[in-house]
Length: 104
Image 1 (cartoon, rainbow, N blue to C red):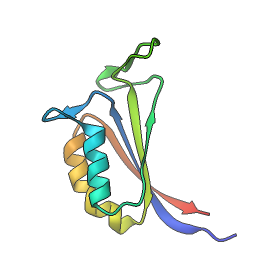
Image 2: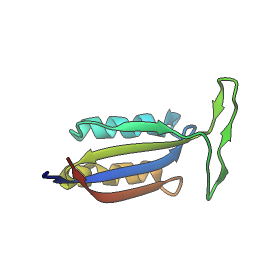
Image 3: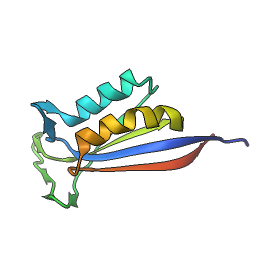
């Protein structure tokens, strides 16, 4: 079976993170779409902690500041074009990782 070499961009932030009153995860998705990235998935975590402390979750349908992970699989060239803008948004309030992956 052959695999195609691609790259996985993983961005870890919190749901309530904002820049100029807009949610960071929405702004990141907009950057990815404008950068011709074909797809992205936003995963909501049930808990976690980081440098800024624990994520707070309420069970009764209201979630406050839960962890989010945005995952993208794309060619390195496309990711490199959008990465500077994403880094500006995330800054020190999250974590961005880039991994080489084999796509089946």
